Length: 427
Figure 1 (tube, helix red, strand yellow):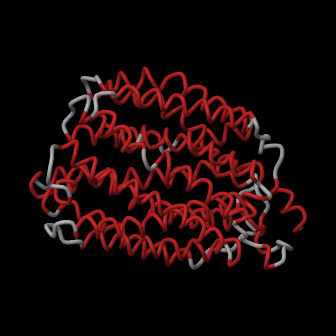
Figure 2 (figure 1 turned 30 degrees about the horizontal axis):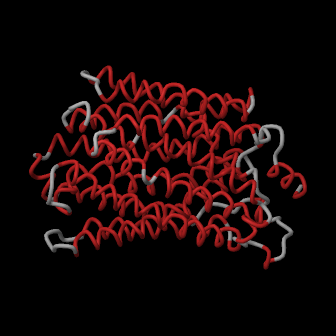
Figure 3 (figure 1 turned 90 degrees about the vertical axis):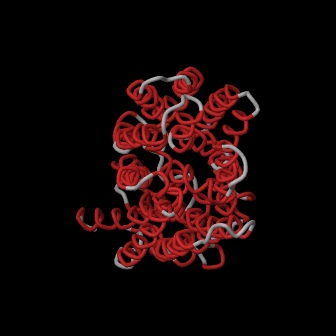
């Protein structure tokens, strides 16, 4: 495969990731407006807590989506699963854009159904796209392209926040509360249609097409826990730590600035937008560096640094008085987090053989995200509500130590590559 063709395939595989996460994070970004429409009772914290609870429920659907799409990707192919996942996200986003409010419990119930559809889609998207990119990239550039997966993920989140900042400038606050919050979900549905068309033209990976594995052995979910239990537990531990950190320093950051530091909604959104715009370019750089100094060493440095800075940084952000200070404080953990984000896909993909790789990347990842990443905002807001906000900061630091312990058990994927061995056998 020529470098140009490889690049086109990787970009095509990543494009859907952008749309999936644009739609996923649009919910988090615009919750500050639509939470009042769906949960009118109580104060702002109670309204945000209701919206965050449904955000967390969307994560519960992700393991099921990971199981269904992971099995499908290991049996029918990575490209086919990627095309289907973005189509499902389109349906969930369009549903949110059209849900009527003011129907009592029916309105939040419909919102819940839409988030479940999105959860199924995102659960399938990550495993398929991470597997696709890991198998498509050249050996000496796998860290770099693994990091590129978070460029599209963060780019989707950034695009959602940029749209929020734009709408905050062109619409009144009342218009945003009444109907403006529907706009990002309609945009996301339209983008999903475009990516669905693009993905129909990408190639299947060589690892999948040349796999000499009987059909009945492909995509066997039970094998993750009976034949690869250590690998599966390792992926869960790495994801629990990295996912909690990612959602804390991106999605929850906006609420921390508004609810604890006292920033206005527009200023808090602008700070988080600038942080994401900076962070978006860091994972590929971390992956590129890891391709040279070692993947395992880079991942260890990421978790260790986050374990040290989480409590003092989050405490300082919660009492920040200027947007500039909040930006630079938030940038420190994001620089450290880029080590995990840059290598997240490749470490998981390299632990499993080709016939269960998409499942192995997707299922334990989705389970850990459902428990830790999906409940990051809910846990932080709950502890804030009962007057123990600092306890959440210590929880984040503790989970980074868990990530360090899991990393010690890994082989360095720069030097030990199952995917490279598969490519050599395929010629």
